[in-house]
Length: 192
Image 1 (tube, rainbow, N blue to C red):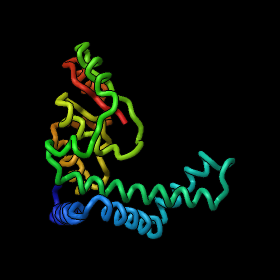
Image 2: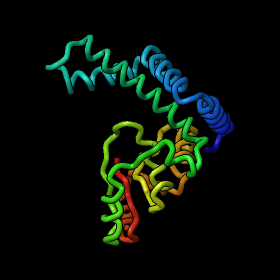
Image 3: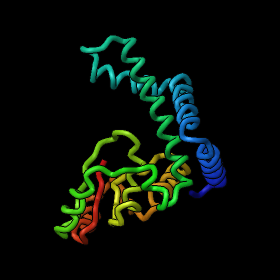
């Protein structure tokens, strides 16, 4: 971040997430859902993009009203994801087992024991930002291929969120060499 304006926006983002993270899980998810609904109502650009994408995917199966409802649910879910990110900021590694249960960890261990590194391929399903907690829970070095966000203050915030438990970040553009180096060192690399 370079300008005073960007620093101010970073402070606003940080304060907002700190405030949001103070709510209980239940209350926070309700607030997150309402924030998502508010974004759906106010952000016509992204609402229309979501509706257009869902129409391309489901236009033959679902009518316009169903697609609009689905788009609204997507926005509400994104609001919940924002809350979960904020809420997770107060967690320490001791808290992980209480809230997170990794299924198939034995498969990860077997792959890791081969010493060739582990390439984890996943989609943007659920709260992908919580993936970095895996680094803290498993103790395995983890790097994640990410696209830096266009808005610098928000990008700085998410760099902090994503790397706080030791996950490395590999910028998506020209990432192949860094991915191969990480795998050669026997590390885990996640690609969304």
